[in-house]
Length: 131
Image (cartoon, rainbow, N blue to C red; front, top):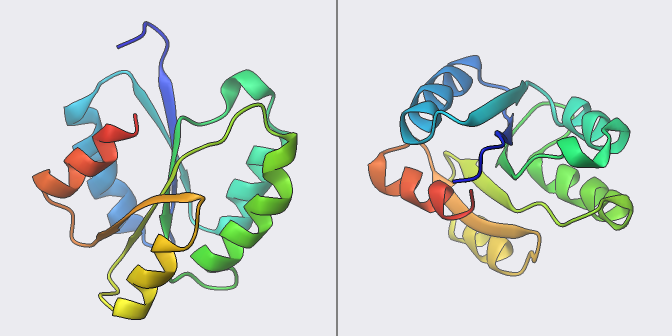
């Protein structure tokens, strides 16, 4: 891995999920800097105001959140990504096992993967592929 720390945005309204994923990500790679957002609007604001070198290497996005859900975030990100230096891979992470959600992910080019909660070692390997 590079000497530089990689930034990961975790966008989820569940504080317990933030705690768990931070623990699991740091076990995989202690060079990661995890930035937590409890709402999608804050993550979008950070993306749009961030200097380019400090963009995240990955965004882990919850589907079901208050106010702005994961799909709304993707729509807003589409409008923003042309101003970003590089495309940021996004992994949607949700408790939903609805087949329609999984199919929608397959037709959403911004999303690299869909993983379901709770996380386990195999699901963390999917996340690791994009870091």
